[in-house]
Image (cartoon, rainbow, N blue to C red; front, side, top):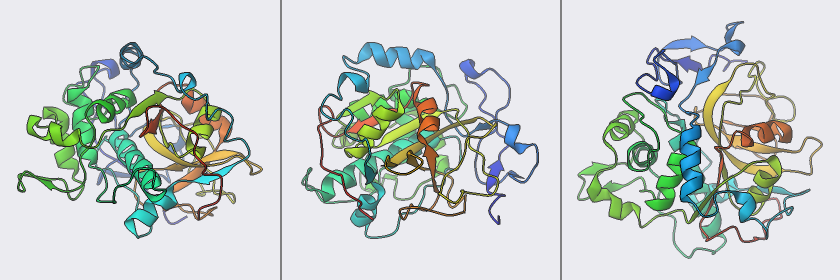
Length: 344
């Protein structure tokens, strides 16, 4: 497998975060030590930027009248059973190009999962004329990273990298997002992803003068997903799910013949996006899009995008049970949508 050296670890640690302790923790990024072919690598934890925080989750639950998808999914409950629904093609149709995966440069995976989730959600609803607006640009992940760490933060993140999922969810819901454009006569330029800008905003927060512009692009509803069935039903109705967990995957040999990665011994403290489900296949599961560029090879199914893989329903269920995965909706709730066809 030519890309088994995709994993790159940096010596920069997630320090200064009390809930993680003071030990150096490694994360994916450009440069650093090549990792992947080492026989012992499957046992080494990967810190890609997700921080597990029970304190943040409890605050999210306290501050939301209906924080759980199970409290709002009556219309869609069970509707994903036996279905095949792919959401990423809506983004490809909107952008008029093949999907290009994000490639994070520091421990900002949560913002990449949310940024892509907002884009998939917007493209799906735009293309189906649910929200009558034209596609403009992708979401700025740097804004989500800075806003989640500083504007809606539930914990003291200190100077290290990383974030939990519910803080990002709170930001895109309460404040919204900015698109990849220039703002205020070019004073702020988010046209191209920059890990350095993300780190700067992660320290200082989103400039106050940009917050009114963020509020033009809110995500109406964000809800905690607790099971594979809830995740399946959400995605089947056009609501992507950000998966924040420490569930890791074995990359040896790349994707298997069905396009899946099996769970691995090595924990991944990471956030990715679930943007498709296939509950009719011999192996029911979800399509997970990563933010490590073109990092994995092997067989594919249903024209899945570069940098993605399928995961079994039982594995996704394990991730959902860690209670930091969120379904995104541009409605007040999660109405039933007719997406029961193969769009690829």
